[in-house]
Image (cartoon, rainbow, N blue to C red; front, top):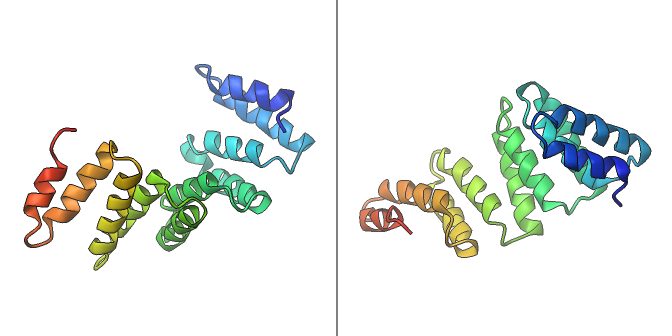
Length: 169
């Protein structure tokens, strides 16, 4: 349920220089309605933009998920934040997989999972499968085409496929 403060915060977040004021309004809205998952999620998205607020953003994404466990976007964004923490790769993979369990055709989650897996030794085939899944869901996803091409180029005999992925769409 959106209230005045979340509406104001949303508007402030769209104005140049309004992120701090938007965060304050979301925090006020959360004090009024602590169970509002969307307010926690929106606050997390704002905090995620400030390098010194990483831990607070992670906390807000986790609160969002505690309130609404099937919030795929919160799992995906939490995974992205966890990648920025020391030793957070395995937890990030788990969050991307959870987002995909909730929403199987989530191109960005497939892409992010593919990107993480491509950096892990011996996981190239899994990364390729995730990039291909992202492209089935969103055929016009240029970053997925690019990363799929890079991953395919490293596999003997797949250079023609890699070149195909790098063609303009």
